[in-house]
Amino acid sequence: MSQSRSPVIDPLTLLQAYSIGVFPMADDRDDDDIYWVEPKRRATLPLDAFHLSGSLARTLRRDRFRVTANRAFAQILALCAQSAPDRPSTWINHPIEQAYGTLHAHGFAHSVEVWEDEELVGGLYGVAIGRAFFGESMVSRRTDASKVALAWLVARLRFGGFTLLDCQFMTDHLRSMGAIEMDQRDYLMLLGAAVAGVGLGAGGGASVAALSAGSGVAAERAFAPLAASPLPPSVTESGPLSGQTIAQLLTHTS
Figure 1 (cartoon, rainbow, N blue to C red):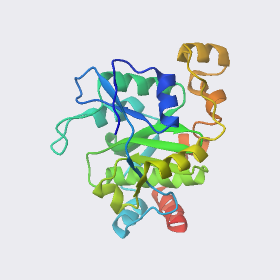
Figure 2 (cartoon, helix red, strand yellow):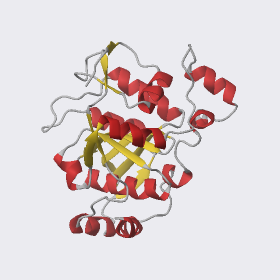
Figure 3 (cartoon, rainbow, N blue to C red):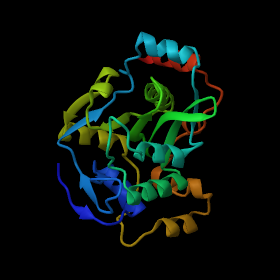
C-alpha cells in the first residue's frame, strides 16, 4: 500500500480519492494525522454471491432486530470508532469522523443501523459514488448485528442497481459471507465501470460549501449533480421491508 501524511481531509478530495481507489486511515483515534491507502490486494463482495447462512436467514426472518438507514449516522460512526476488547484501537480519528459527517450531510455517506428495542447495537457506514458503495466500517454489540446490517445492505444495493461493494481489506468474517480478494488492477477495472460518468471536478479550490450554494437543492442532495444519484430512495430509506423480505431477496439473488 502507498501512504502519504495529511492533517485534514477535504470532502471533495475524499470523493475524488474513492473514485480512483484510495481511502484515508489513521493510526489511532486520538492521532490527528491521516494517511492515504491504496491496497495492492482489494476485498469486494459480489452482490450476487452473498452467502446467506441458514442461521442468518433465521435471524432475519424472526425480525429480532429493527433495521433503519440514515437515521443515526453520527451514532453509527461514533460506535465504529469506539475501542472494544477485540479492537483496542481504531483508525477512525476525529478528522475522519468530521469528513464523513460532511459527506453524509451532502448525501454521499450512508449508514445502516441495527436496533434492539431502542438500543443501537450494530450497523455499518460507507460512501456511495455512482453504482459503487465503499464500505468503511461495521460494528456489532450483539451477536449477528453486523451480519444483519450487511445482509440488509447487500439486498438493497442489488435492488438499487449497484455493481460494486468495496470491502477494502479481506477478513475471515467477510470471506464467510462471500467476499473475494483481487489484484489492484482488476479492482480498478470494476471501480471504473461503477463510477463511469460521475463528474467530481478537478479540485482547484472547489469546496463543499461552494457546491452546496451553487446547487440550489437541499444539503443532503448537494452532491447529486456531481454523482448522478448517491443512493436511490430504495436504499436511503428503510421503508416497509421486513427481515423476511430481505431474506427472500437474498435467497433469490445469491
